[in-house]
Image (cartoon, rainbow, N blue to C red; front, side, top):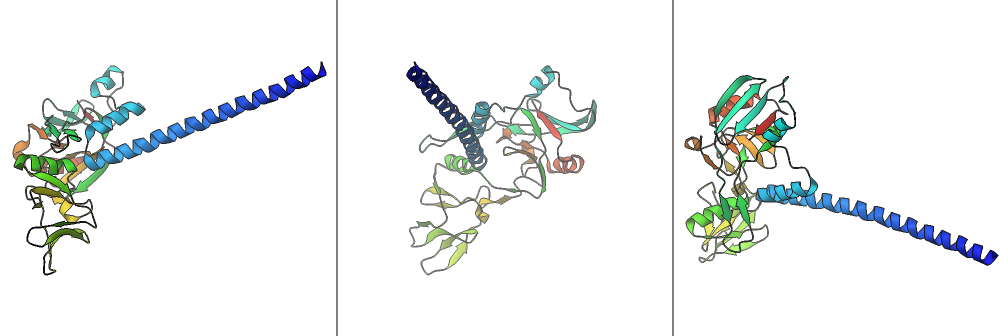
Length: 287
C-alpha cells in the first residue's frame, strides 16, 4: 500500500512539473509571438515609409487591429467632434478642406487628393502601389517650412514607365559603368560621374530630370542629394504620419482634382495660412 502511495505522490510531482513546464513554455511562446509580431510590424512600417507602399501599411494594421476609424465610423459610434479646439476636415469627393471649431469655419479652401491609380512595376510585377488619400482620423505630428521631398521608389518606376525605360538601384559602394569608359558612383552624399581620366562630376537631379544611363533611370541611395527634390512640396508641410501630409505644390493647376499620390495638396498661399493657424496635435478627419 505504501508503495502505491509513494508512486502516486511521485507521479503527482512529475505531473505538476510537466504542467508547470507546459505553462512556462506557453508563456514563453506567447511572449516570443508578441515580440515577433512587434518586430514584423516595425519592419513592415519601415518598409512602407521607405517605399510608400500604402497597401502594406493597411495589411499590417488589419493584422494587429489598429485600423483607424473613418469619420463616418467616429460619428456613428457617438464620438463628438472636438468642441473646445479647432480641427481639420478634408472631403476627398469635394476636394475641399475646412479648418473648423465647433460649427464655425475658420478657414476653407480647395485641395487636390489621391488619384486612385495603381502603378505596377513592369519588370517583375512584384511591386505595386495604389495612390489613394487615406480616409480616417489623423493628427498633425510635425510642421515644416521649405520641405524637401525624398521620392520613394515608385516615383522612379513611374517616371521610367512613362518614358519606356527600366530602373536600376545604385547602392553605396557600387559603380555603374558607362559606354564612354566613365562610371556612375556615390562619393560622399552625391551621385557622381567619374570620368575615364578621374574627374568627378556631381549629377544635378530633380523631378523630371532623373539620372538616365544604359536605358535605365537610376534610383539614387537614400541620403544622397540626388534623392532630395526641393520645391515639389511647396513652401510648407504638415506631416500626418504614415508618409501622409498636407503640403503645398509646384503644380497649382492640379488643385481641385484627384491627381496626387495620396497626400493632400494645397496652393502655397493656402498651406502657408494653414501652417500659421494650425498647432501641433490638431486632429484631421478625412472622408
